[in-house]
Length: 353
Image (cartoon, rainbow, N blue to C red; front, side):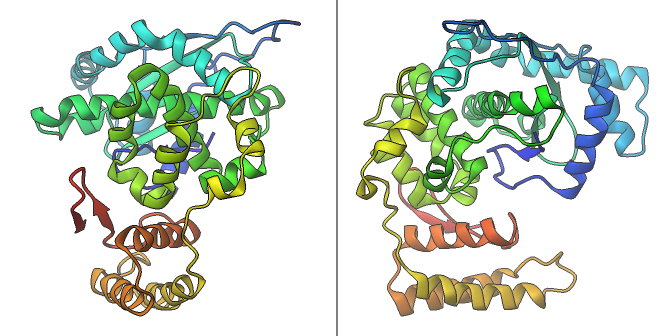
């Protein structure tokens, strides 16, 4: 239910985003549909999902602008609504064709039936980075104003990922919605351990759902995007890809958490057993972060590279092991704490950025 940055940039929600979450929840309380009781027996029908147009998202956009201390003019709002309608058109077309399949896939793969009967999806363009929320369900389109035309199709699919990701949160949010609490339903301890955490579990569910809609290869391209390389970690993404997505087919009788509970431990091993390397990185990076005045507590690029070079040399780490350990470090200390991070591109080349 908390705001999260979606996979176009990979960082988790900021304090500003958390403040906006409170504003948006109040502003849209009347618009968010509450759950209705599920049918007594048999498969529950998925909810009706309404993708709101630019004008339908006006209350949301006003909430963003008011949170920034500025009220836009009517002409600005009209222009923004038209932009949202144009940019969201491919996503709407995709949803018209595949939306019900996605909703049923979410219930099947998680083992959690839909109880909500309807919900709204709001689109925004706002200046705080690529944000998404599950309650209210919000997808930010602002990345589409920055990407070159030859990358537009890929980023449109990343927006599909963001939408399905937030809907996966929403499946687990239903218990909290019904009880007016902030404690969503849990997939189970082992599922979260395999994924690396509750939030990364949502990305694994998203990958399974989209695999059955888009196919394995298009999902593989999305899975290895830079955002997930940083928040989930490359070795864990390889586990998702090579040992789960390519082999396992969840069903309503045996959803993904049940598959994981029954799996052999060796099938779920990341292959990263480097406690000494992790301890060295902790010592070097945490110490650098504590002295990083004027940088918001971020570890300077030269210190990140020096710690990475030392750990790689001393413990003979391969690049994927190092990237996983750095991802795990940020998972403990906070996303975006490292000024640079090692990314692998589709051709297998590495770059610090």
